Length: 177
Image 1: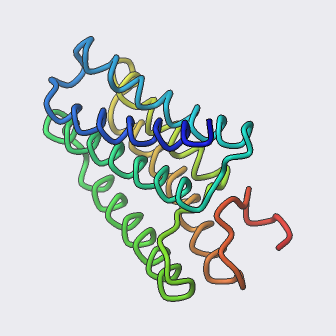
Image 2: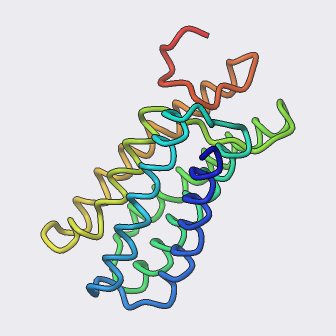
């Protein structure tokens, strides 16, 4: 039972790789994409409910998230005409994320993405984007996604800079630590 969350994260990695082979926005693509998103929710829930959370599981979950989001970006970028302002904003967010990862690496000698509410909100909104794209223009989606992602990235960077220990499961920056 304790390995089920890790197995679900590994399944998300494999399904994310399959996304590269599927035509975007087809029924099969959306089914696999939805399973990936659902697995992201359920693995953490099961780990907490079964008291089987672990550092390895947290790293595996973050890695699966990165692979899933990377697959989605690679698949959608060729079919979406993104305004240059949004592309620049995405690059700036990526720099903040990389800086945060480097700080964690040099301070704690490990890899970590914090499980804050803002990061979860970012993941949820990004997950919804392919469905919303069918109804909302890409510029609006881009501005909303970049705003949420910017707040999450800045929050994580500030937490990593100011904390004395690695706080993988901190809820938000105002949590006392």
